[in-house]
Image (cartoon, rainbow, N blue to C red):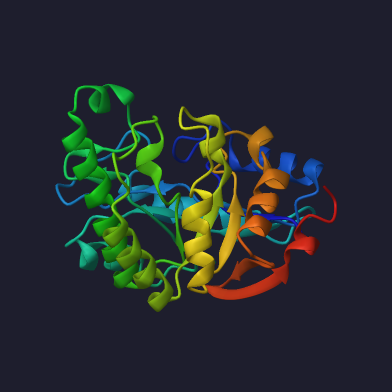
Length: 270
């Protein structure tokens, strides 16, 4: 079964409506298509231009549900939610009681710094400042896991996106975050979008993926698609990385419940 869960429509920063994503998924032979547009509960009440407005959530859910039961892929209801440490209760309250199949948690900000917004802010930093952003990112990821809100942690090691790496990996913070993910039962995604960014590497790196595998952290494959033709972009490449990291199964979601299938089944038609 081919499943892809981390995908964006015009409800946030995607380039196609949900119906067009479904049509393309049908053409590609996708069995399960998840829609997971951006949703932000900002501590200062900001509305991000790349995310749906907070008052649009009900309409977003209704549209996705309207496509269920039709011919083509099974449509899963997801959401990519920004994580802000110390803001757990407002985030939890905004999501409570909704019929999600899965929730993706993302760390896009460290303080006021937008990690993946633009390379220019990174360019003006000293290496010491970049190292601190990397370190604090993993501290935030640890608290994301500890919140217990999310099913999937998105694009681990996102701070490498523009090619500004830490002078040395913050190993203590990485280990603590991965331990927290394992303890919480939060899975990770192998996000193929990174292969098309300046870092030219999937999220996460093979070393971090091996560390996830050693802790028993489950995984799914994601293209983080923002247009229909990218729904399965680099999935065969991702499968190879998973196998190199020692994975034999990939995760599936329905009604916030986790199941698994062999990797071979996920790539049978590639």
